[in-house]
Image (tube, rainbow, N blue to C red):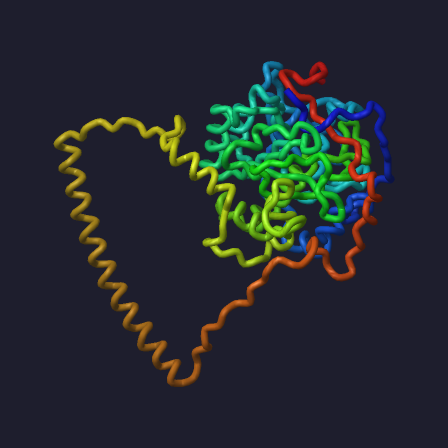
Length: 440
């Protein structure tokens, strides 16, 4: 058993800021460097803030009663034996605050601290869980309205994704839910395969710093698909304060889940498969040219994901892996069809009569359509002769912007981290049955 991130020191840097005026529009704090790197306020929020999308945070619980998260949470649950609604009480402990921190990165309102989430109009569903019941957590979220599931937890699983968790991920995908998962945090240590990152169909995220360099602990694995800010990324605590100087793939996962929420809000009818294709094909490559095991296909760029023209023929490695798994597991317990009973003679006779009626209606409709088409043809031909028909032109297509996607005039990102000092204090959720501490 391992934690998603390495163990951290007991002391933590905590800061309080003045409350935001009630009428002020939310904006990122200066220490939320990903806001300037991603041009959230200038380029992203004018397009989407995540309205109408629920993100399930599968973690160790969220305190939705702190001012920054008031009104953000929808009903959740605790799938561990302890039971409950998925919410926790106030605490200054960073381990116990992990789920609250992830929720804040996604949808904090900044009411008290000024700390704002990337998708502040999204809703959070807290699903309190641990590695022993991830499958129940994923299924609950998929069944209760989540469009995105964010899992910033990991467990060393050398034998691959356990069947119950793989089936749960497939269950969520079949219900049009995007599953975002942290890559793990042993990249500079044992670098073991982590679950649920090794489950087919998960959008797996590594961590980078403010110069798009891989964070030292991010996992080196073939399952990594993309990367997002994770080094020196602060987080809300469950007591309403902000902890600084943190690092890990947990934060990268939550921020990517927020970007997925932005895209799903902008394109509410777009399938999970298309959303994942759009995000993975608008990343900015970092490190060696092409895909690598630390950052996948590159760093997520929200504005590009919202605006770029991504053809349906573009590669989709996440769903390609899922499709391969499905091809060898074609019948899932949730998809087994019910056994049909043979029809009676009366039912068969009724079916035939219905078919005859349908054929008659179709014939009448077809005749009417032919008449309409002929009239439209005459009108269009007359307009063309009069020069009244505009030529058909191709709409302007937009590709991903360079760099992080920052707008001109946006504040620059923080200075590079000095050599030898990369990486904040790792941010670790409790793992194992019940975590490392008693329930809150």
